[in-house]
Length: 375
Ligand code: HEC
Ligand code: HEC
Ligand code: HEC
Ligand code: HEC
Ligand code: HEC
View 1 (cartoon, protein in one colour):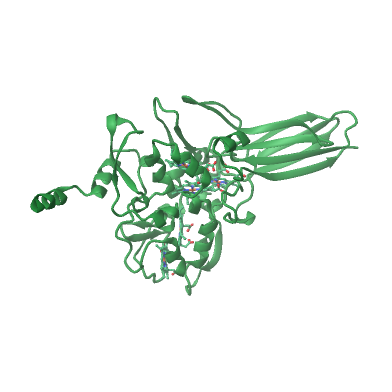
View 2 (view 1 turned 45 degrees about the vertical axis):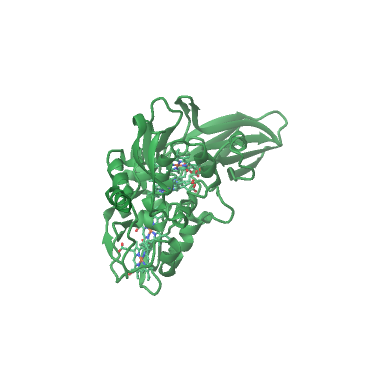
């Protein structure tokens, strides 16, 4: 009996090997970024806090970033609860196998909502809570990959040009796929939007805008170098109180100009600063520009996408391409004394917040307010 059990135990294929074999048959956006198994020689574990002992400022910045809350984000937690395709989400929100409680090793009837899952014996729940943690972007097969600093790190490093380009970012921020018969879709098109605009040609990548340069030591006690802030500020709407990068991390995308021409208010909205569509990413994001006279709203211009979900279909897209300007004219009512134009950026609507039971979750931010007296 004992012998038989041992024999069974011994012949059981390693879950990690099975998960790798399955992933290899899937498109890249359905694969994790790596395993994280076996750690990195020279450092005790892969926790962000451990890296932060030496990379203190980088750690503090990352901690305020949305990447660090990609798992604990209340909206993500609400959505993933309902999801039969959970394994897909984990690959981008907790992208190392070490962070995943169960691993997909196949699909029943080739259905992405019926994964064959096995328990992961190496699962590290604390590391999972760190979402897109340092190791997810930097650790590959026990070696720390980076832009190539030189110096004398206490851990093995490998210089990799992907860290100065958009390649690493696009691994998660460029993924568009439909799943026939399903009510969900992958709609991350930020990479293609950026390639279609002027910034790619000018050599300005995601990293240049979202990880602005600063001169300081890269590690405690090291020499001053030009390094990259680890902030990744987006639309300016926090997810968790006290954990969002400061305004100087990245400007708002919108530029807003307002002028009075006769009896018309001329409002010019420009995608002045975003290297891709404004807004980009999640199709629920919208920018509203509302004109009011003496406190009474007169017109709202909406920049965003319109979708229905059964099946996922895009019906409209009024977003602003990089550097695109669009003008709208609002007639001034007789007797009006003052105009106020307010721009607001929204992550999700009030209705969707209620639907997801996310009371108190921040969903928008006022980005611009222009006040104009009317003679
Ligand atoms: C979303 C991916 C991502 C995450 C998460 C991330 N980094 Fe980075 N890191 C990068 C990229 C990209 C660069 C290269 C930026 C450049 O040089 O232009 C970089 C550069 C670095 C460098 C070299 C110095 C510099 O700033 O250029 C160090 C050190 C570093 N990261 C440490 C960390 C630590 C520690 C954490 C976690 C607290 C972390 N990184 C999290 C993507 C990431
Ligand atoms: C005991 C201190 C220490 C710990 C812990 C540590 N590092 Fe480093 N790391 C360094 C030093 C020192 C350098 C070289 C810095 C320099 O010369 O400017 C470095 C360099 C790097 C680089 C740049 C590599 C290159 O040349 O492109 C990255 C990226 C990096 N570390 C990431 C990490 C990550 C991720 C962790 C945690 C998993 C970590 N480090 C843990 C001390 C440490
Ligand atoms: C492993 C997948 C992954 C990689 C690699 C990655 N991201 Fe992200 N990024 C995400 C996810 C997931 C979110 C959203 C998390 C959430 O909202 O819960 C996000 C959010 C963001 C945001 C929005 C922040 C906000 O304020 O809402 C920006 C900006 C961003 N990433 C830029 C980058 C850049 C630049 C790179 C390359 C250096 C990069 N990302 C690499 C997955 C990734
Ligand atoms: C020229 C600078 C610039 C470049 C290049 C750029 N971004 Fe952005 N990005 C911005 C600005 C500014 C915003 C804030 C937009 C806003 O106000 O909503 C933003 C917002 C975002 C957001 C948040 C979602 C949203 O709608 O606000 C994500 C995600 C993002 N960028 C990812 C990327 C990725 C990935 C790349 C590379 C393919 C990239 N960005 C290239 C400037 C840039
Ligand atoms: C291909 C990588 C990828 C996969 C797979 C993925 N996400 Fe994301 N997710 C992202 C990126 C990138 C963002 C940031 C873009 C943005 O915020 O607009 C994001 C943002 C989010 C957000 C925040 C949206 C917002 O408006 O702030 C939620 C919630 C979310 N994802 C849930 C999920 C769920 C649930 C799944 C599985 C059904 C999933 N994601 C699968 C990459 C991915």
